Length: 163
Image (cartoon, rainbow, N blue to C red; front, side, top):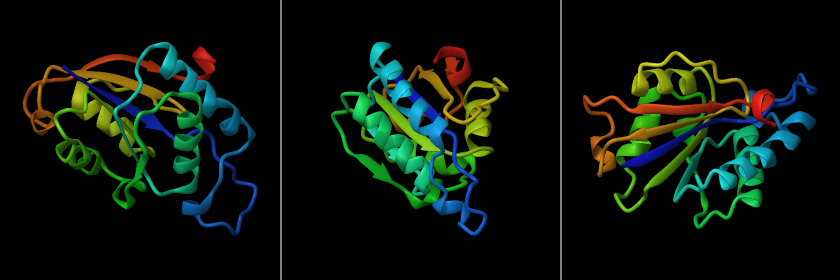
């Protein structure tokens, strides 16, 4: 059994209209919600063995704030291919994950995050900023993840509902 944590970055700022999308930071709500999401991950004993994150500032900051509030035993890995990525990019990360990793977290953006949840589980879920989908996969090897078996969506934790 493997667990996949699919996290959409926390709420970002649109204060600077001249700033590139890639460089947008978190706003105050995002800075408040991200550590809470990390605490929730720790409370539910969902601490990931591997974290792979988009290179966008808002995603990296979300991952860093979560790492500060969760006892991660790994470094946050940055992957350019996850910036505004389709589900196939996340599946590629899964395929490249070592089998000794039981819990993998990916941090990215919509619409790819919602599409990934639907592709893996068949569930059409809304993933607002800061939302975390917890998916259990009945597999022993990450290379089996994109196969024919359906993954099971355990729950989606949305900041407004749980924080």
